[in-house]
Image 1 (cartoon, rainbow, N blue to C red):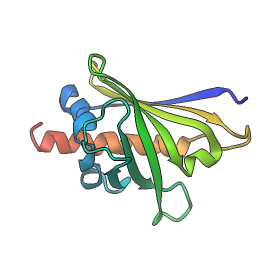
Image 2 (image 1 turned 180 degrees about the vertical axis):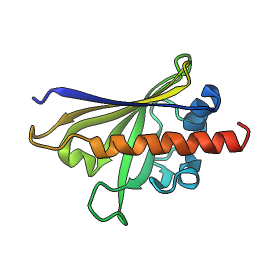
Image 3 (image 1 turned 30 degrees about the vertical axis):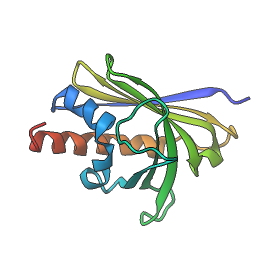
Image 4 (image 1 turned 120 degrees about the horizontal axis):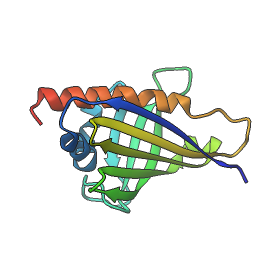
Length: 157
């Protein structure tokens, strides 16, 4: 069995840490409008009727693909695995999508820290030791952080 690997990216944010966390917890449907260069679409999945991220809620997201053609999008279905409001942390687990062709498991955790940083942690298990690390996805996250931060500051959140 392949070992569990971890990659982390952390960026400073200038908006309110509570607003940043609330955006991802309750307003993720705005992601295509806020950072359309990374997130093309997002939708509710499997009968979910609320955008609020609660444990077990499922969504489908289309993000910029790691393929060489920048005009393609990658569909990913995920479930919210855990939500910790006290530490402003949400963990998403990939259920379906091209990512699972390379990885046995793939989860992403956002934690908004009291030191005004947005920290994303990717935990993954490669199916094949020769598979690439998910660096492409890790490199998208600072763009997401920056665009959400600018959006929240410019809209007085």
